[in-house]
Length: 370
Image (cartoon, rainbow, N blue to C red; front, side):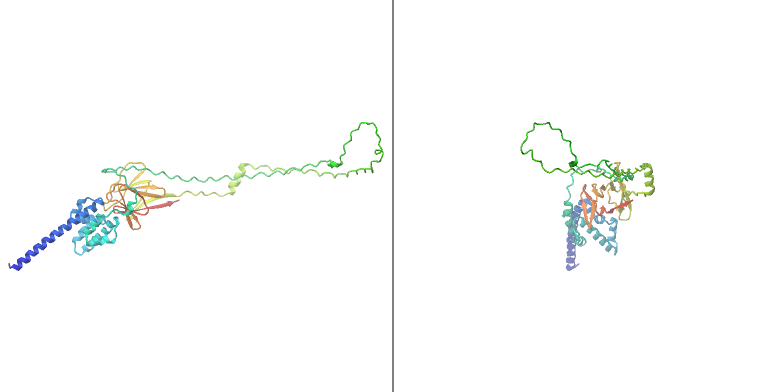
């Protein structure tokens, strides 16, 4: 072996050793940052330190089957595996409030991507919620469900009875004319009382005549004979109530009473499965169980196994529903116009669109029936 060959071999060994050290340092960096991301998503942190398994967990958290990690070891198909990993990383980044830039980092610089997500706070949308109560962790949380008050049906309007025909009014009596005509007060002359005889005292003035004589009043003309009084019109006999009701019942039409609409709710999964919601409080999960009265325990089909046994609770309030995270492992997400918002464990929020329980997509449909 010549000196040049020995030098080349030594340089190759040194370069390989330096590359190994750098690669090991990058792996330790990536695993440490990824373990923090897994812990914030409810996954055991030790999975980030196992090669291949950490990539399978990234695919699972992003809504992709974990077994597709084998595509990385198949020529040509590995390109499809890179696309699946990019889509999964994009979905994970959106739960942290990151956009397309973090997806590019996940493909080109995975350690930098994991570090950015590990150092990112929760999205601002989750900060506006009321702080969750601090409780001690339990293996199986016990949740008290309060049934929502049932909705009373509106009272049915009572049809008033048909009024009975009023009796014919009686004509007022005609006053009877007096046969003797009333004379004017001026024509009535009261008889003068006799005046006692007084001693005559004659004066020159009394001998004079009192004046011209007063003419006598003419005799009154005879009054015309009064007209005979009119007899009142005969009063018709009243119609009996039974006859009036029979007549009105034959002529009237049957009144149609409008019944209130019956509202039903259905939980629809992304794959088309339909599950009726039969109670005002519904517990969702992989295998929910309980004996709480007035509570429906609904098992949701889950092929990805990302649902907890008791994952979330739906509570009806009026014409809407409220979802509560029951300390689930993979969380509850609200799809708000393309932006996913995660609920903190134990928190509640009104359902206004699509739900994500782990990787299972759900929506609630309302149906009104007469």
